Length: 285
Image (cartoon, rainbow, N blue to C red; front, side, top):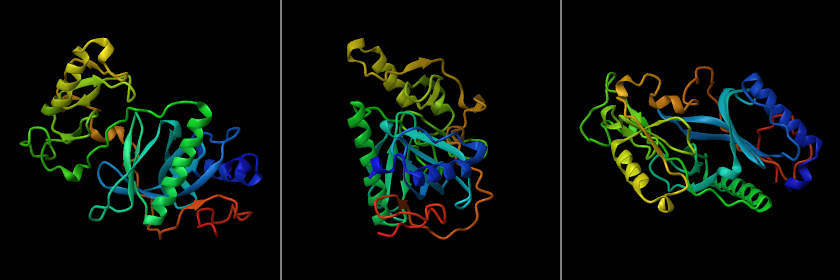
């Protein structure tokens, strides 16, 4: 299916339309051999609360962004190489249903589809693209992935010391190693976590101790993604190191209107034309 769409005029128009919707806030997406496989709205679990995000699945990358005007304008574009992605299905729990994790070495997060069928469609198409990429490249799937951050509203007190209550003054921070919500004193250390950043990142005291022990082991026993410790700093004085800084799509929803749910569209053998009008509507099968 993907091979037949590579050089098609319809595929080129779809990709151009995605680029136009992101405008100057996005990067060019048209490349030789790239195919837009599918698109639709998923609910992304952000730091503060779940939010609707527009996702575009290509045969080599996954792109998502904030919805400014549905089907017309998006911003805060994120591009994830599919070779780095691992999916993990989530069990339904309370209001959170039809979800799965998108995991990479630099960032991991949960998304939720509107129905179980849509979840199956999304996961199957993404897995197929990953499988095809790895087979063609001969690469192995990644073994190290960033932790999924615990949402702010799930932690009223520090998950490390179990004492500090979060207030306007006692801010929440996230350990970049385990994803826990912790207070400033319990996250006063930093490590360079290879795969996430070349700069020192905030980690909780427990992860700092574990990473330090790992680093002390003989070199041949250390994992490939061994971290590098740096001088500890107090969280309250860390300025720009607040939890939200690494979740840059977790804001700017002021312009997003209320919208009815549109089912995702995956491009296949059945659709011929009409790709430019109402392009996020469900494909007739």
